[in-house]
Length: 282
Image 1 (cartoon, rainbow, N blue to C red):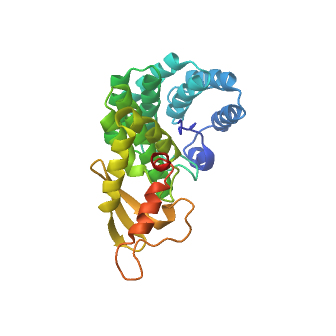
Image 2: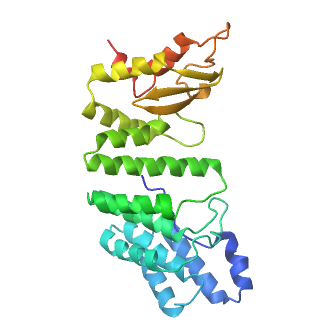
Image 3: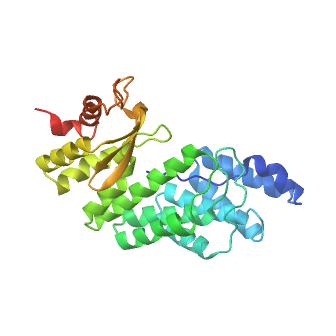
């Protein structure tokens, strides 16, 4: 599940140098980042601690502190990591400080820390606390990025976290409905975990016959927008469907040659979906 990252310098090296940071400070931080990427997590963790002792007021201090929390999780020290991330949530760090690489736009200290805390509490099965931090990173400190792929990946990550937490709270209906909007791959980000969870959760709440009935109703009420796009409604959730989402079907159009809804193609699409094909096997 974890999509969280270490905070390093990258292309910000020149910027920090222009802000009168010493070469020793910059080089030390870069060396510790490299040590982390090489997998020597304990050495890097201890090094970032020494860095914070020597440069407590450095502009790099928030990154060093966050990296300590990240590395503690890599070392399996969840409780110590939790303390660091909770501390970050109380600090006045610049959430939209330039991250420094081409893959991430901002540092997002609180968004990332809240995600770590939600994951830790979810692993501990403290679902109330997990839900608290999910709502924080979803609503109060949301993820920001210039790339649609990253935004979609984060949206899926967020709803998967909601779903797992609601499942832990015994709210299966809410868990399933959080996942359904991501039922079909949209070409931007993988929905594999969504499909795995739906395959697990649906039988826990509904019988095979009930699911088949819901699917048949969704097929009958499928709404076509044009030959390449439509909406499929399941359990009251409208799900976007694009033709390139169809599994192993090649070129399929939602509208027939006569300009009407291509019912046969739509039915085949639903019945061959990885989550639903099991319900139509003889």
